[in-house]
Length: 223
Image (tube, rainbow, N blue to C red):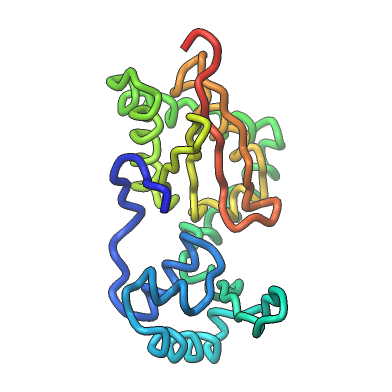
């Protein structure tokens, strides 16, 4: 298993067995019962019972994975209701405010609001990241900030020396869906705080249908 750099606490540890399964599927993606059992260090029989209960509650669903001549495997993933167990922070209020700003100030006013948020984020993130000179440490510091903000962030080192900043949850998904300027703004902040000699590319995007958002980060020329 690939080691994650820097201990990044995504959120408080799940308290119940069902929560642990939902959390694993949220942060690691679709898995078979066997893989879940191995990850959670419990029996496959126990996992299957829990999955059956969660399926009855419409929190998980499975798809048959046929490989070769063997018996199809059930690959489990969260349903939309299951993803809803990791809620968008104050989504209804956020959408109401965005719509009100658009009505009163137009798109220009909303752009100004996003710009102000970007400036505040940049100053906060720079304070936490600037004490680190090594790229790995800077990325880990950024991930810790994002984890505290509810993004379930973690970092995976890649074989070619780059890093993958993974965000398993988006606590502002409703706002980002209503105005993708929030996503562009956050990417701008990442580029700024990690330094001018760092290349960043978004490789996965929740708004495009991916399970997570992910960013490939690598040293550029002059770093």
